[in-house]
Length: 352
Image 1 (cartoon, rainbow, N blue to C red):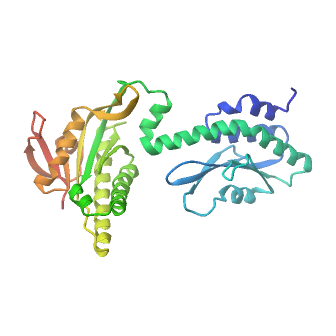
Image 2 (cartoon, rainbow, N blue to C red):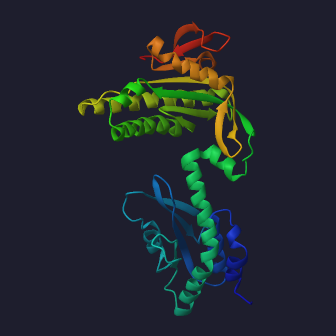
Image 3 (cartoon, rainbow, N blue to C red):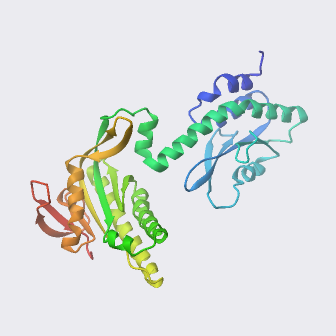
């Protein structure tokens, strides 16, 4: 079959594109080279994600650059693509598929498209259906894996790291935190209200972690295990972890003030920080795996978090972290931790 070059590319190669952004730029460049008067393009796809409803990629012909705009769940219908294209020139849009949430591929011209040019763009949209189906399926899978597993684990699963017993050693500042008196609170609280309280807690703890470059590895009941990987000087990871726990503490103080005005109990929590190495890998049954963190550093930070209640502190910091930071900390002496042979030097934040 003798096809124009852009259509042959869509038929033979486009399905293996690294991502929708690369696909859009490559298709736009090929149509531009084939003589179409393009100023830009937009591709919008729906994604299964707890926050993001739609992703839109915007390509500008003049520079070849692609940027991304997000449409959030519960928000107004995302018109980012159409609005952006309208600023560039006359617009033609095609919905690729029969479903309400099918991808939308739009083009802006440097001048109005003639009938033949509009027909070529519609033909390109038809040929784009198959590769876009493959790309959006991969994007949907990536979004689901990241929502449930986190960025690091999702990337490993997609890369094929599915064998039991495999893992990676990560040197990181570790953060372990959980709510105090959670069992008593759950016994006295309706399930829907308890879930709302947990979501509010996780929003503040995980939000603070992500804001300072960390990653939540696991939610365990009412607990959080997060890491700030050491990619340069260990002090950088430790400072980020400390800033995150300060932000989480401020967020929880604000939440408790709001809950008090609503006649609800506060949500006290404990958090601990430690610096060390952990093994993050596949552990479980032959047919049911989980990514789990193990190692002495994980044991220590977990035991240190358990010391928050006896010491009457919401944040405890190991000597390993304290040695890497210039932040003013209050020493609390050395303490024996259950199951840990050597005593641990313990510090806390001012005004804790």
